[in-house]
Image (tube, rainbow, N blue to C red):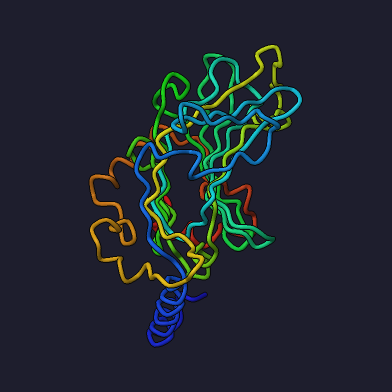
Length: 302
């Protein structure tokens, strides 16, 4: 594939990519929202008929699920690259059958998406943290992890770093997954479509817990997940289109635009993947009988 192309072709592709990114940045403005920012300012409860609530003068948001309905919210802003932090406290007790999804997504049939999904469990069993990356409408890039703490006992920070070179998923500052831009070998990468932040709490007992074997126990309803301390250092689609993200990218406040994992964080990620990863699509040879996805042959994934 592209790996056999000439250096002049690679140079042309790189130049084209840079030009397109500069063009995209011209309609964006960099914003930074302080930790603990007001949920009223940043998000809309979009469904759930009152089951989603903003509390404590905008400092806390809760989503609830009962037999009639779940609930969800979305960000007012659309982002194209950013470092997004949110603290979540997941549904406690017997949460089998429930899914708490927290993700970035664009719209349409060729949408891009960056996913955290938390699959509920029977009391005493570990939550499964499910991650995925969609580009141009194609996903199937799942990695799943157990967590090294009880995510229902307290709030923990779940972060997505998304820049033109890579996507890094982190938990409490520890990176768990990196998805690199591998366009040079023909792998689409999310870079052209602004995405909103979404979260929802819903019933998925047809698949969520042990492949659907364990169903939701509605006697434990309502199920509730809580959110606080949202922070976004990000490029936001500007209505005026007058500001440029790239012109500010050298600012120390926007170091995330070129951020990569240093050796210490690479080792921390390897530790998580060695001890807590329970599924990696790049190791699932039965799933890809025609050959593994091309990014699996690179250093994209451990």
